[in-house]
Length: 378
Image (cartoon, rainbow, N blue to C red; front, side, top):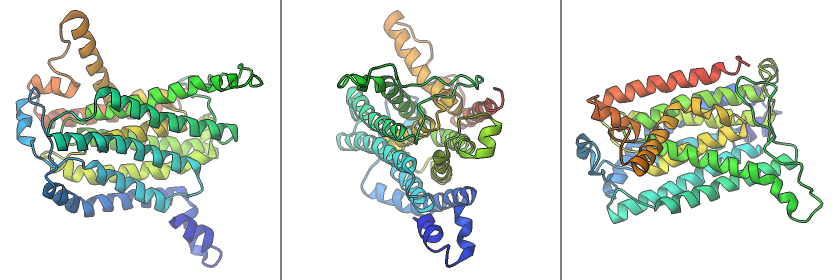
């Protein structure tokens, strides 16, 4: 809203306000605003969560060292969402449809996580929504994002062509244009692959971040790295010079999501201040699902979904460890890891929690840097 007020409305009368048209300036200030919001209202949120006795329930079959964390305020994701969404609305162009799609997607996934956390608190157990219910709600939220993007594609504001790392000339289209649109309702089948793809990416991304959130500062630290990489990708995707130099499909409107990614970086840093070991607050599902949904949504909009395994490399490894563990036990009655997700496996090997966190952060940074190098290795 500040962009609309100070640049679009007041710039003709006060020319120094032209600085608000620059995306880099607004991204930097959005990040700082998000950081300050998280730092300043963090103690208030922690105090209120304690007053309402909203504490984390620790699974008894997990590492015994975690039992002492029982009762630590959770649902800190509310703080993260406020610190991300408020600066985004303040500093971004309110007429940009991709900003609102990302904001609403973050809210939708955050609401699912909120319901999950609320059930855990009320029933005082470590499990909230059933796995099926959670997947259904996540799928519906993802379908809403997909449908909105299909509509924008019809208005030539979005491209369903997906970017393939290392192959600059290969851009497969996710829409089946071969379906005869003249046959009633049959043309709608053209959208099925794209919708299913978006559902897979967003549901997978949100759950991957959720599974990573098991150690103090682990998930939020990896989020800072992933959001920083996405901020750079969104900027170059909308920049006429950089997009042409890197031979990316240029989408001018998506560059406004750089403000959102900047807000995510700032909010995550601010939350890490209170979530660092030993944590004063946990993000809960309301935070992890919202962050995962946001990361997935941005990746889909800038058509870099295939880079997600590198942008969020730790998230993917954590999710894969759970799938492999469950699949191995069901098929062979044997476990691959001492415990899943992967961070618990290393704890069981004797690594201290702080060492696991630091080394996973380093690995996340390496993954993100590799993702960025693929822009030129094409």
